[in-house]
Length: 345
Ligand code: 5GP
Image 1 (cartoon, helix red, strand yellow):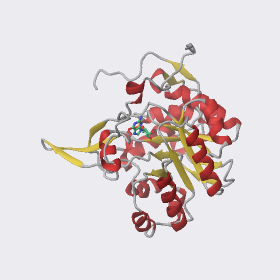
Image 2 (image 1 turned 45 degrees about the vertical axis):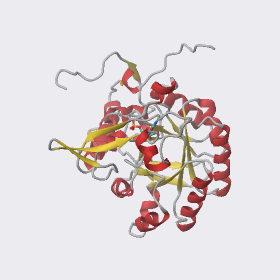
Image 3 (image 1 turned 120 degrees about the horizontal axis):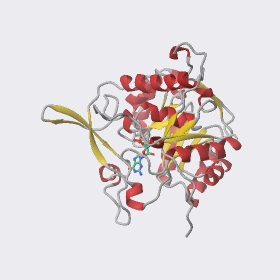
Image 4 (image 1 turned 90 degrees about the horizontal axis):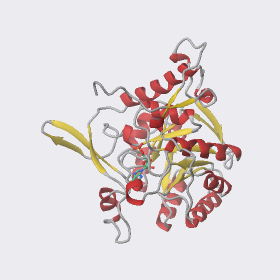
């Protein structure tokens, strides 16, 4: 056993220090980024905010709406081939720039991935997602996917430390997904005692990835637009959002009526609810590591999109960044003991 005594920070531990700026208005701030991927060699432009591949968030309806704003949806892995076919046959060509196909690491997952990509070769992003990206089996699976699909952009995760980011990039990932335990419906830290404060994970992993020409997605832990700005400020190339996109028309999850108030069901992908739905229950050998909650119904997701993008644009103007690309270069975090004034919340 050993103890690392460096302080590791989450979003709630910092604020972004304002800086003198020549920008006149937040409307001048460009949120588009262009990335060239280290393995696939291709380029992509868009707004690098990604809806999480949860069946209550990463839906086809979400993908259609977010694509209109240049954003991306990691479509969850529980849609059938027929539903993929139906969805893509009505969509504009540009949709392929804004969706990722999610996969787990079983042989069924691989067959399904092959079938979807065979039917829709224009799909460019694959998101290989496991709760614990540290296993050798995961790395072998990543290698297999890279070999099968040399031209696709591969996202792989989740991990939280630089050495594993490097291993994943060297094994074929273009983008590494970073986050263990910060999610709004995640109970990993409580159930296992394992985790890493998200902002430090992002800063350390971004450094490791960028050194090899790779990119990272900060996944989980954003509870408000300011957290999204902090994730970008800390060096994330993309930010993935779950809970903030839940409760909307485009979100999956049952609508529930309680005393005249409407709620939508939102649950972690390793929650009992998700496992009952997709895996026939929680396997004997494992504990559920996700919560099930009811979030107030919030109408169309476009309101939240405006809130998030408006917040990030405004953060850029506070530090004098004319584009999202400049935000991390111009970010100085200050460690704080306070965040929002709670007097009226
Ligand atoms: P949020 O934006 O809601 O804070 O975090 C979303 C992220 O939480 C997802 O992208 C995923 O990485 C993670 N997540 C989703 N479901 C579960 C779960 O059941 N258990 C754990 N440990 N993490 C989850």
